[in-house]
Image (cartoon, rainbow, N blue to C red):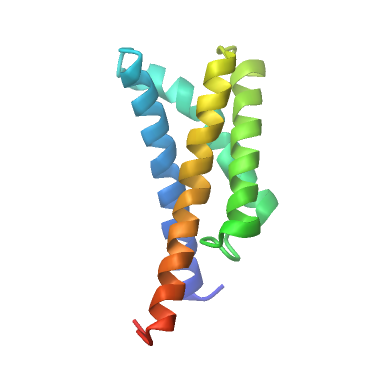
Length: 131
């Protein structure tokens, strides 16, 4: 892996993790729950584990900012496995509303930023911008 490829993968991974943090902090805040690190980590952990698995299964480091199939795979695995781990391993609620909102939020963020990035690159290439 070249230095440029490593940098792109590291940035993409950081963006994905950043969206998981927004998911956890936003969710806890919307329910007026404590911002205590231990409690937030308990919500974050199953999705973070699922994100690592998703990156490995999708080999996301190869094409980290491509929406299809990389972004779709990362989203589906992170949402599905994250919810399963949350329920089965961490003993947390997976109420239907949480499943719907969590899955939708992760789709918009984990897949969405990749779609915007792809559009941006195509736009720059079409205009002849070589940056």
